[in-house]
Length: 357
Image (cartoon, rainbow, N blue to C red; front, top):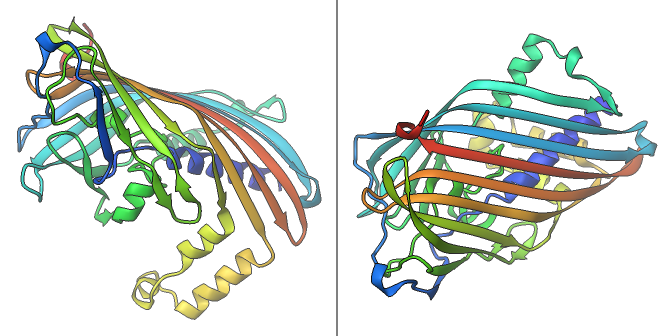
């Protein structure tokens, strides 16, 4: 039972992280607060060359801890895990479907992976993981391949995982990271912040309001504040330093309602999975009958710093930090209990031509 609860806790913590992946919607409310130094004003835009590729190196660190108390279900426990990884990210550039848009397909590969610690009930478990276990953990931790369509100002217009397009309402509501993003990082940390169409300079401030009505949750107030804090030299480039901070109100969601809804599908989709819709309905009832699960999480910090090269319209370095915490209460036919968790994630990317300098 303890292992099952720990797996459940890990999955729910990653779900909270994914919900926190914030990205401006195509109808985001956008406002420039301050245009900055009048002597340095310029219109900023991303400038991607079709049929080319951008190469980056990245490092990512994650720490997660959780404590569970399920006395009526056989056990309680706590877990702490820390890992770091490094590798390469490439963006394949193609013309987008909308006029002036660009499609970026992100591919990543891991070169380094280190399980820094893994404890259960205060006891180290890292030594009990074999090569196959570590390989599986590394595979699950890898960044997914995805494609996004962005406008010239960096707004996210479409997103796909493989051949599967994310519905617009999911893109806008849960953030472009969606449930499959294991990092919980904002897409602004992977592709750069959304830029104003007006001329701005050092000292400029602008706000993107991404408040949305989220399925199963309701209205979530969310906004990102961007500042251009400096213009400086970085690896031979003249870059603008853009600091971004996102605020997302605390979230409470009915997980059972969400899971049941996600398992509902039409006959064609069920047939594609080799299941009859009636069988699927029976499975849903069997899995969730008599269960209640409520999850709450808070985003204590979600910030990034971006070095943007206005001469060629690309990001040359970015660092993103995310800190979140949450809890879950569960009632089941054979008992009830609760869980609390916390997660910290940091990710840094640098253009390949700056590696080793």
